Amino acid sequence: MVKQLRLPLPKWGGRRRGAGRPRKHPHPGLIGPGVPHMKRADFAARNPVHLTLRTLPGVGFLRGYSRLRAIEDALREARERFGLRVIHYSVQGNHLHLLVEADGVASLARGMQGLAIRLARALNRAARRRGTVFADRYHSRVLATRREVVNALRYVLQNFRHHLREDVLPAGTDPCSSAIWLRIPLPEDAPVVAPRTWLLRHAGDG
Image (cartoon, rainbow, N blue to C red; front, side):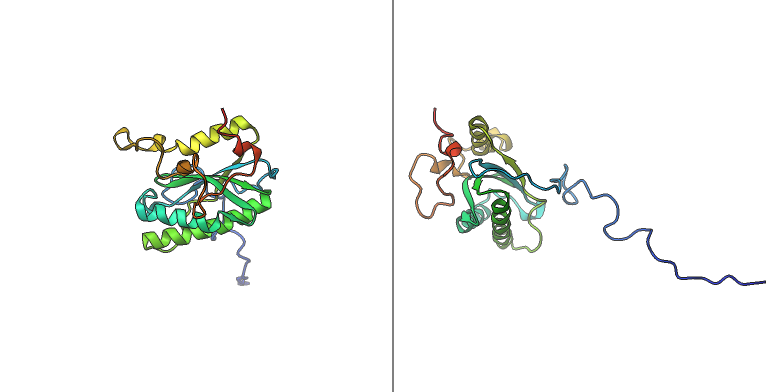
């Protein structure tokens, strides 16, 4: 009787790290789909962009004093780098909205990479933690018309009304946003810069 020999077979199948479909959730414990890893469409420098960044639960409440100051300091450092200009922002409990101008998709990517790094470091220091800060890639929406820009500006600066209870809503404008800079000249230490695009410069007209 001939005994069959065991041959070492290549380990092509079975369970392995990173196998299978990409997860739909950006991070364990978060509800909702993440931002798809698709190539971002190019856009003209005349079009502002609305960005949203979500943080992980361990980062804490972003509207608290220390975290809000950390975010605004990071915005000051990166408000006009690599062709990215931060024009407006609002900070909510676990996410922040930005209205930015960029010279194109490459400038937006470089600028957001630098800004995300600064934000992550600042928030980790404020929270006395280490590790990942953002739940997923930033979500972006290019604004092509004046109506879209007006609606986006209103949405960003009024976003706190969607997330806070009536009994804790601040009177007037949101103190955790750039609304304070709408009617006064921008000082040098402001966390935002003046808009250059026609669409954002005229968003508040009429």
